[in-house]
Length: 234
Ligand code: HPA
Image (cartoon, rainbow, N blue to C red; front, side, top):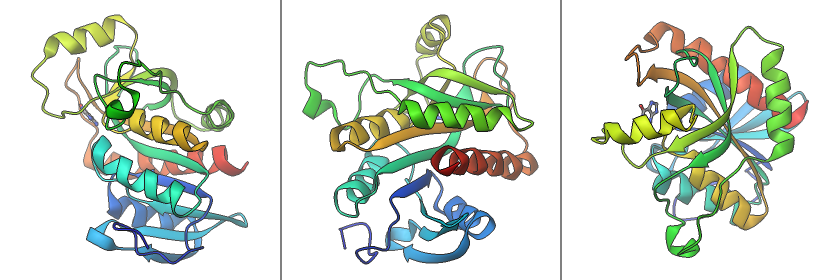
C-alpha cells in the first residue's frame, strides 16, 4: 500500500502501461488483457493487472501532467517493483509533416521544468527513452497501418499555453509534438534504473488546428496499446 495505490504487494506486474485517463486503463485492460483484475482505485485512478500472451502486465492511469505522473511512476517502481513503464497518451502536433491520427514515439522529451528539477538543480539532464523499447515499438508500428514518427517531443506544464513564441521555437527545432508527462517519466525511470518509453497518438494540431474526431480516438488508442504491448513482449 502507498498513499495513492491500494494494490497488495505482488499485484502490480513488472511491465506497466500508463494512459493519462484512468477510464482508458479500464478500456485497454478489458479489450487487450486476459483475466484483468482491478488492483487500484484510490482517487478513481484505476489500475488493472492481467495477461498478454502469457505475460503479466498492469495498465494504470497516470493522470494529467508531470506532478501526477511522477507520484504514480515513483510508487509503481519504488514500492511495487515495476521495471518497464510505457506511457500511451496523446499529443498536439508541432510539425506540418505530422498529422492527426499519426503515432509519435518519443526519443527525447524537452522541458522548461519537471518535478525533478529540485533534484537536478543546475543540471540540464536530457530525458530519453530506453533504446530497446524504442526499437521494438518502432518495428511494431511499421507492421501496422499507421504513420509513425520518431524524435523529440516537448513536455509542457500547461495545456492552455499563452506562449505562441515557444511553439515556433519548438517547431523550428524539429520537436514533433507537445504533451505533458513524458519528461518526468523518463527522469523517474532513469533515477530508479527502470526502462521507459512514451508513445503518443496525435489528437490535435497546433499549426493547422485540426483535431481527431471523437469516433477515431478509440481506434488510435487501440493501435498504441498494441504497439506498447509488442514493444514490451514481442
Ligand atoms: N498541449 C499539451 N498537451 C497535449 C496537447 C496539447 O496541445 N494535445 C494533447 N496533449
